[in-house]
Length: 228
Image (tube, rainbow, N blue to C red):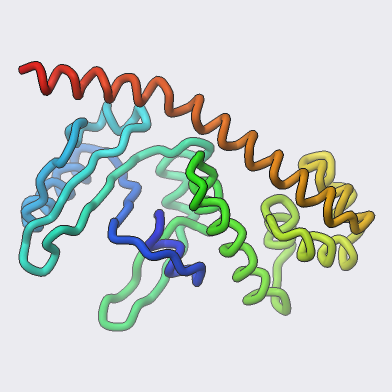
């Protein structure tokens, strides 16, 4: 997940970190801790790698110190705002093959887009690019599910207008789920840009509200740690 997944999908994003979503059964956590030990990875901040912490939505952060991985930061999460639970994400994962490395499990594109809907400014151009790349790659061999996904998540006004021209009935039926599609039907690019901006602001507000109690908890842990 994260920036490395975006690179694998063709929406280039420079990232020094490795973000992973992980299963949190006892056996899996045991294996992950053993791998972190092999990488000489130190827990660089609270909280520790504990199932209950991950279930709450916190991330656990590590810095690697083997010669091959010196300085690499690994962030581990089990659940993300707006996304399904790990088992569902795992069942929908994409498999991407990299030469000399092998097969990698990556968040499905729809799940990656959901995970990227954060309050961070840098994530929104990446969402737009991810979907543009998907449309470019599959526009001549698409599935009905993909077209639904494009209508509901595309953030490029001209692409939405083009899709509406090609599939007006579908666009009209999906406008109840995403009202800005009505602007695509009448080819109102300026109205689309305004609606997309409002949509982004609303998601950022939801993300801030989601993280507020988690950040308060982190501040409490930080204070407790520095007070000892």
